[in-house]
Length: 353
Image: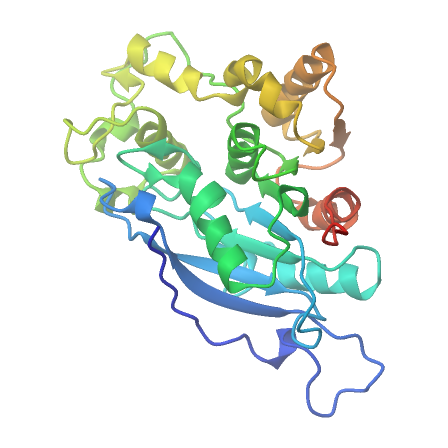
């Protein structure tokens, strides 16, 4: 496996620990690094995305001083049209996670852990954390290549019991998809408002072509509306077509007519459709949790189905609907629910010999 890294500068002192003039009793903060990790499985993707991916890494407050200590790792996946750059505060966004991590760890409410987020913003503004010739092997990149890189270059606890996987929206979808396929890599998963758990697409003819049919190049994607972008990203991930340039994908609608073969391929990539065949893997996971805001009706509805299916199989899990929409309480959920969940369910020490 060939992996490369280009280490960027550490963030300014605001996120990098005790600074000159800071009171000694002021809690230490964690530090953030942004590096590049090369994905062999992402090479030659037909979208033309670079296989050298930005990855943001939060190192807990004690990491730089306790040089013999090893830490569990939480892999956190961002949503559609987002990026690690936005979530980690390099650019202003609706969320910035390093201060959330700092507060929770400084308060002693959660144990210290490394937190890793790869940049899955692509030519279609989201990889769907899936595998296709058009997007590249994102499942393998997250579950194998990125994990292997972290275990080699950072002081991790390189054991399944010490790895967690979580994500928001598209990232929640990715956490479910990758988590249930790789119980030998991740022990616990948390889904924040996971999108795309089931495929819903109208079978009624539309009055003319869908807007995505007018997109003729990746340059046109930037000008498209959110729904069009989502359709293109989903098609690139779930219905790739190497014989259909320049976008190398098949859309689920053509001239207003649903394309049954494409719709079947999309349905095959929906976790609720896949779940039955992965129950043996899901039973191997140590802990599962998922939630959604009550105003996020479609996603909350698919969570109800996921809860019902896991219950029918006797799979222990935690499920919650809270008052909120798709984004307005995600920071709070990470602080009060997600981080404590992994603090309780990951292993924070190497086993005694």
